[in-house]
Image 1: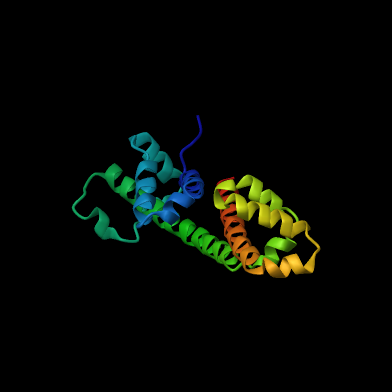
Image 2 (image 1 turned 90 degrees about the horizontal axis):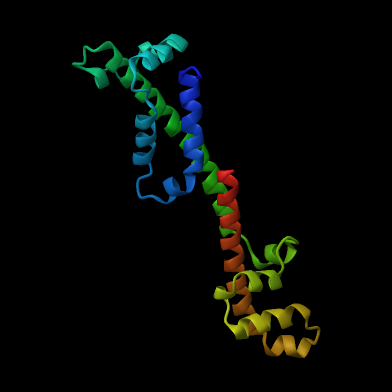
Length: 187
Protein backbone atom coordinates (compact mmCIF):
# COMPACT_ATOMS: atom_id res chain seq x y z
CA UNK A 1 0.00 0.00 0.00
CA UNK A 2 1.40 3.38 -0.97
CA UNK A 3 1.94 6.11 1.53
CA UNK A 4 -0.44 9.08 1.38
CA UNK A 5 1.50 12.32 0.98
CA UNK A 6 0.56 15.84 0.00
CA UNK A 7 2.83 15.43 -3.02
CA UNK A 8 0.98 12.30 -4.20
CA UNK A 9 -2.39 14.00 -3.68
CA UNK A 10 -1.23 16.98 -5.74
CA UNK A 11 -0.04 14.64 -8.51
CA UNK A 12 -3.48 13.02 -8.56
CA UNK A 13 -5.14 16.44 -8.82
CA UNK A 14 -2.83 17.42 -11.71
CA UNK A 15 -3.68 14.23 -13.55
CA UNK A 16 -7.39 14.70 -12.97
CA UNK A 17 -7.30 18.32 -14.17
CA UNK A 18 -5.54 17.24 -17.37
CA UNK A 19 -7.94 14.33 -17.90
CA UNK A 20 -10.95 16.61 -17.57
CA UNK A 21 -9.44 19.69 -19.23
CA UNK A 22 -11.96 19.84 -22.06
CA UNK A 23 -14.96 19.51 -19.76
CA UNK A 24 -13.56 22.16 -17.41
CA UNK A 25 -12.74 24.47 -20.32
CA UNK A 26 -16.17 24.14 -21.88
CA UNK A 27 -18.08 24.43 -18.58
CA UNK A 28 -19.61 27.75 -17.60
CA UNK A 29 -17.75 27.67 -14.31
CA UNK A 30 -15.08 24.98 -14.39
CA UNK A 31 -13.77 26.09 -11.04
CA UNK A 32 -16.62 24.22 -9.36
CA UNK A 33 -15.13 21.02 -10.77
CA UNK A 34 -11.69 21.95 -9.41
CA UNK A 35 -13.16 22.29 -5.91
CA UNK A 36 -14.94 18.95 -6.29
CA UNK A 37 -11.65 17.32 -7.31
CA UNK A 38 -9.88 18.75 -4.27
CA UNK A 39 -12.70 17.76 -1.95
CA UNK A 40 -12.84 14.18 -3.21
CA UNK A 41 -9.04 13.85 -2.91
CA UNK A 42 -8.87 14.69 0.79
CA UNK A 43 -8.29 11.50 2.78
CA UNK A 44 -11.18 10.52 5.04
CA UNK A 45 -9.37 8.27 7.53
CA UNK A 46 -7.50 9.80 10.45
CA UNK A 47 -4.48 7.56 9.85
CA UNK A 48 -4.21 8.86 6.27
CA UNK A 49 -4.60 12.46 7.43
CA UNK A 50 -1.83 11.92 9.99
CA UNK A 51 0.33 10.33 7.26
CA UNK A 52 -0.08 13.43 5.08
CA UNK A 53 0.80 15.68 8.00
CA UNK A 54 3.87 13.58 8.80
CA UNK A 55 5.05 13.71 5.18
CA UNK A 56 4.55 17.46 4.84
CA UNK A 57 4.44 19.64 7.96
CA UNK A 58 3.12 22.60 5.91
CA UNK A 59 -0.25 20.89 6.27
CA UNK A 60 -0.26 22.09 9.88
CA UNK A 61 -0.71 25.67 8.61
CA UNK A 62 -3.47 27.22 6.56
CA UNK A 63 -3.21 30.29 4.37
CA UNK A 64 -6.77 31.16 5.37
CA UNK A 65 -7.22 30.20 9.04
CA UNK A 66 -10.84 31.34 8.78
CA UNK A 67 -11.63 28.11 6.95
CA UNK A 68 -11.24 26.17 10.18
CA UNK A 69 -12.72 28.79 12.48
CA UNK A 70 -14.68 27.16 15.28
CA UNK A 71 -13.29 23.71 14.48
CA UNK A 72 -11.54 22.10 17.44
CA UNK A 73 -11.08 18.65 15.92
CA UNK A 74 -7.42 18.24 14.98
CA UNK A 75 -8.08 15.77 12.17
CA UNK A 76 -10.83 17.96 10.71
CA UNK A 77 -8.39 20.91 10.73
CA UNK A 78 -5.79 18.78 8.90
CA UNK A 79 -8.43 17.78 6.32
CA UNK A 80 -9.41 21.44 5.82
CA UNK A 81 -5.76 22.41 5.35
CA UNK A 82 -5.23 19.61 2.81
CA UNK A 83 -8.37 20.72 0.97
CA UNK A 84 -7.09 24.31 0.86
CA UNK A 85 -3.71 23.23 -0.52
CA UNK A 86 -5.28 20.90 -3.09
CA UNK A 87 -7.66 23.65 -4.23
CA UNK A 88 -4.73 26.01 -4.67
CA UNK A 89 -2.80 23.39 -6.61
CA UNK A 90 -5.80 22.53 -8.80
CA UNK A 91 -6.26 26.21 -9.64
CA UNK A 92 -2.55 26.71 -10.37
CA UNK A 93 -2.51 23.62 -12.58
CA UNK A 94 -5.67 24.72 -14.35
CA UNK A 95 -4.46 28.29 -14.91
CA UNK A 96 -1.24 27.04 -16.53
CA UNK A 97 -3.11 24.51 -18.64
CA UNK A 98 -5.81 27.02 -19.61
CA UNK A 99 -3.14 29.41 -20.90
CA UNK A 100 -1.73 26.60 -23.07
CA UNK A 101 -5.22 25.69 -24.27
CA UNK A 102 -6.12 29.30 -25.10
CA UNK A 103 -2.88 29.75 -27.03
CA UNK A 104 -3.29 26.51 -28.98
CA UNK A 105 -6.95 27.16 -29.82
CA UNK A 106 -6.13 30.74 -30.89
CA UNK A 107 -3.47 29.36 -33.23
CA UNK A 108 -6.02 26.94 -34.69
CA UNK A 109 -8.59 29.73 -35.11
CA UNK A 110 -5.97 31.85 -36.92
CA UNK A 111 -5.25 29.14 -39.51
CA UNK A 112 -5.68 30.20 -43.13
CA UNK A 113 -6.25 28.23 -46.29
CA UNK A 114 -2.51 28.35 -47.03
CA UNK A 115 -1.89 26.47 -43.77
CA UNK A 116 -4.31 23.76 -44.88
CA UNK A 117 -2.68 23.50 -48.29
CA UNK A 118 0.82 23.38 -46.75
CA UNK A 119 -0.09 20.80 -44.11
CA UNK A 120 1.11 17.53 -45.60
CA UNK A 121 -0.69 15.51 -42.93
CA UNK A 122 -4.14 16.46 -44.23
CA UNK A 123 -5.11 16.65 -47.89
CA UNK A 124 -8.27 18.19 -49.25
CA UNK A 125 -9.39 14.73 -50.40
CA UNK A 126 -8.79 13.35 -46.91
CA UNK A 127 -10.90 16.10 -45.33
CA UNK A 128 -13.73 15.49 -47.76
CA UNK A 129 -13.59 11.72 -47.22
CA UNK A 130 -13.24 11.84 -43.42
CA UNK A 131 -15.85 14.55 -42.86
CA UNK A 132 -18.51 14.04 -45.53
CA UNK A 133 -21.11 15.67 -43.28
CA UNK A 134 -19.30 18.99 -43.78
CA UNK A 135 -19.66 18.99 -47.55
CA UNK A 136 -22.44 18.61 -50.07
CA UNK A 137 -21.77 16.14 -52.86
CA UNK A 138 -21.32 19.10 -55.25
CA UNK A 139 -18.71 20.62 -52.92
CA UNK A 140 -16.92 17.29 -52.60
CA UNK A 141 -16.71 16.89 -56.36
CA UNK A 142 -15.68 20.51 -56.78
CA UNK A 143 -12.89 20.29 -54.20
CA UNK A 144 -11.60 17.04 -55.64
CA UNK A 145 -11.61 18.43 -59.16
CA UNK A 146 -10.10 21.77 -58.07
CA UNK A 147 -7.24 19.91 -56.41
CA UNK A 148 -6.43 18.08 -59.64
CA UNK A 149 -7.68 20.42 -62.39
CA UNK A 150 -5.06 22.32 -64.35
CA UNK A 151 -7.40 24.15 -66.77
CA UNK A 152 -7.26 27.85 -65.78
CA UNK A 153 -10.56 28.63 -67.53
CA UNK A 154 -12.39 26.04 -65.44
CA UNK A 155 -10.69 27.35 -62.28
CA UNK A 156 -11.76 30.92 -63.08
CA UNK A 157 -15.31 29.93 -64.01
CA UNK A 158 -15.79 28.09 -60.69
CA UNK A 159 -13.73 30.42 -58.50
CA UNK A 160 -16.55 31.54 -56.15
CA UNK A 161 -17.84 28.00 -55.60
CA UNK A 162 -14.31 26.73 -55.04
CA UNK A 163 -13.66 29.51 -52.50
CA UNK A 164 -16.87 28.64 -50.61
CA UNK A 165 -16.00 24.95 -50.57
CA UNK A 166 -12.46 25.73 -49.44
CA UNK A 167 -13.82 27.89 -46.60
CA UNK A 168 -15.90 24.91 -45.47
CA UNK A 169 -12.82 22.71 -45.80
CA UNK A 170 -10.83 25.13 -43.68
CA UNK A 171 -13.48 25.00 -40.93
CA UNK A 172 -13.43 21.19 -41.07
CA UNK A 173 -9.65 21.29 -40.88
CA UNK A 174 -9.79 23.56 -37.81
CA UNK A 175 -12.33 21.25 -36.18
CA UNK A 176 -10.09 18.26 -36.87
CA UNK A 177 -7.12 20.12 -35.39
CA UNK A 178 -9.15 20.98 -32.26
CA UNK A 179 -10.11 17.33 -31.79
CA UNK A 180 -6.49 16.25 -32.20
CA UNK A 181 -5.44 18.94 -29.73
CA UNK A 182 -7.90 17.71 -27.08
CA UNK A 183 -6.73 14.14 -27.66
CA UNK A 184 -3.12 15.26 -27.04
CA UNK A 185 -4.09 17.07 -23.83
CA UNK A 186 -5.72 13.92 -22.49
CA UNK A 187 -2.67 11.74 -23.24
